[in-house]
Length: 279
Image (cartoon, rainbow, N blue to C red; front, side, top):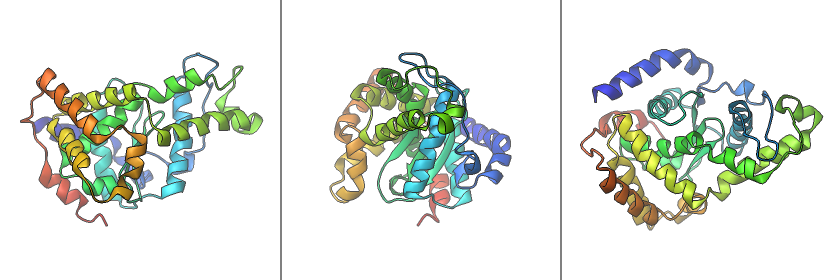
């Protein structure tokens, strides 16, 4: 409990100015969402952090335009604090992570390249405590930390020749669009079963490292697996992720194998206070 409070307090001090400049997507200035960076993949060439961040801005722009954002600065700040607390213990903590709440009743979450993480209002409403939020965000953070989008871009061999993303929007817009469209479609199509399994495993690890009980993520998956009503709201999640029942079984096995400490806090009162005004 003390560890979580310290990390949240430290994050608030560190990112306070960012929240004032970007109230709708935590840590992200939407006025800069289209600014470019440098090279993109050539065949199997490694996609750089800057490449991913440039594409992530494009994905963020698309998601914001498609769904809109929940305009609640306090709630966005809270989700961002929890997200960054979890991200501090991930495999790739050196890049900036941004968090936003999409204004849709669909139950889902999305991980754009380069650290752009979104959770839907529908999923946020369905959570019971902060440990569940940490697990849900941890799963998406894992997609970024394990470079799942970047690996698919490299496999796709989308760009022939060294193209600068900074100039591609104007000089080779079709090249830039090919990569950004591929990244966006991947989010809705879903990652491979292996990538999803890895992200579920990492979600448990990241949550526990941040001081949250891994049981939170397990409880969330169990509840999603048991939900019979609201199939329309779950449609997007079922399309982009493996069945929740399968994921719940794998998570249970992982918890038993790794012997995670389930007595770590869930922080239900703080979570309920933060989401009380969510409509």
